[in-house]
Image (tube, rainbow, N blue to C red):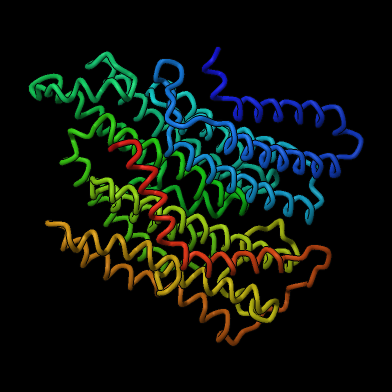
Length: 490
């Protein structure tokens, strides 16, 4: 029973979830829209209170349920990121429902359940436990992908995601079964002792190697890494903007955290293999994502290829196989999340100016009127895309600089340094193209309407302030991440 004490924040949040379900079921048929708005506000308050409980009452470096769950400094750091993303995505859903007069509580409740499953999933320290929570996350993702009920594109995206996601889950399950069959273990911590004794590659080692490749293939699909990236543009183009942000940030944070645990705690003796695989897949992702983005006219598909490029950078950081690589990986991940949140805040501001927000993302040629709608939004948009391109002194530059530096100084990675540097310059073309279309494109579309009643100025100024503030606190973030990782592995 004492172990439940360490799960008080999660137990509190799931209690709030069921309470709001009860409230929604009792009041939904009276005033649909107002009930949904109240539901979102209550979930937002619940998320804030969860954050306060997490900071004030949660112990760190604690093993729970006989080491099948673990609450350490990395998990604590990821939980704080997850709460911030949950509150922001919930706010985006609130805007979407408010402007489209939609009284459907299911997306907000599914988002809450996705958030709770993410909190428990990052604590998992066992393959069986992780697989159950991963399936819970993926099933909720399939439902969120078809949130736009009356859109055939959304239904098609959800179906593609379901079919390909089921295949990746099957690969991972087969890998887990093979690994358990050859070793008899499921807990991450137990593998360190077994593999430290040496693995006989004539029989057991070959089976473990096959299981590792299957598990890694499943993770690469979840992170949209080449060659498992085909589903990303079609799915992102068919779902709602808040769901795109959820798939590209919170989902990636969870699976990157578990992948780091698996690589470092289970398969670290295979570092020679997974370092090469991740390095090769990372280079392919950066190259194909950059080339594919040059031919897109939809912001949703352009953002999809941008996430493929960033996924390639994640793999390159992991391929270093060092603690410094993990530290700079999470530093880049924080920069990526901040930039993505700012981008979706600006796009949401732009979309509510457009008649028919329910149609989702805009096309690149529609950016021609962006600067005329709001100069502040255009300024934040420019900083976001320059940050994605890695233009100094914005935050995106620092994330890529750490990768370039590590590739340059580490023996055997000079070729990767030159390739990544060339492709990064290539990928900056389509970011600069968006800015060109915003300010210098001659054809001005005339189908936008100014809508009153919702002010984004405070939000946009806040993101502008964060971009400036991040320049001064970049060393502080790196020092914080050094404390997080060194407190566990040193």
